[in-house]
Length: 210
Image 1 (cartoon, rainbow, N blue to C red):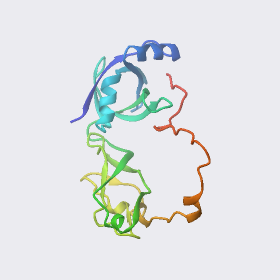
Image 2: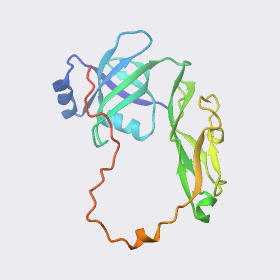
Image 3: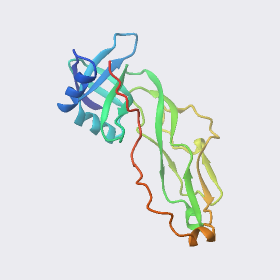
């Protein structure tokens, strides 16, 4: 079942208007597609965040307009914590679309218990599917992944009606021998306090406004 996003038409655009919206718990968005006029919208920030948490791509818009749409792009703040803008594409029932879908690994690789390291090489793949049946993710089970082996796109579990557009031989995950740490590195004293690492999705800093 598609997530529902309640929308309002935006009459004001620009950076200041967008900031006011965010202070009110709203997110600016744009709806486009099918040769129709682009429509500036505002969405509930909590509803958008819930849709993203659930991995939803196809949503039903209700409120000032009723449409089916795809979440095409999310613009995040520098730290990947706040959604700044949403791009929505109109879709019709039965229409086929192409988009990127995340790949998630499932299971326990036997090679990891033989001193191997599981390395995911491909994290998303382009698919073609019905606009109303977009998979939230594609699963790759690694229960048979041995040391020195590689699993490719052809090993993905693909739902009926979904066509993967990537080359079937494209590597997705491999299990390689863990590199041994040189003895001199183990004995070397620390060079000093390390700089803190910023963890999070690094996205465009500039705000997209319509």
